[in-house]
Length: 129
Image (cartoon, rainbow, N blue to C red; front, side, top):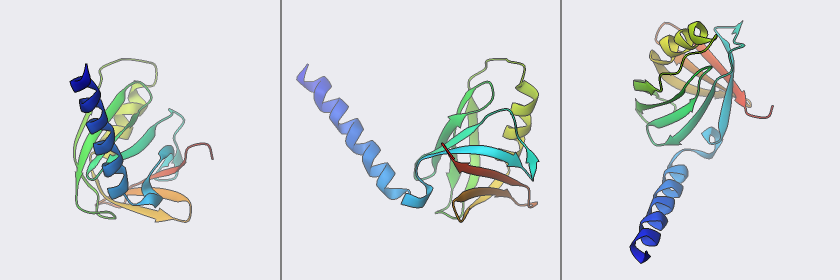
């Protein structure tokens, strides 16, 4: 039992170390509002979980991924998701298609923009705003 407690403590410490390496301004949960200025009503969130890692909830599925580069460079290298279906699956596919092409993350005021090489932008606001 003691080993389990130590292992759990190590995981918590590792998680807090990751959070310290993600700049504070990028931490927290972000809610997608639009894709290239077109409103996104499907509901999607993004959390930068550590250096080069992120996760979130898309309209139907939970997802996670990896990205290369130090912020603001944020070249998405992989996205994986659960495989649930729902009425918003087409919107989810649209979101993932853009997310997989992201190469940078930029804070503009209180908003987060993830951009593709073609200039398509995912616009997020801090959750609760």
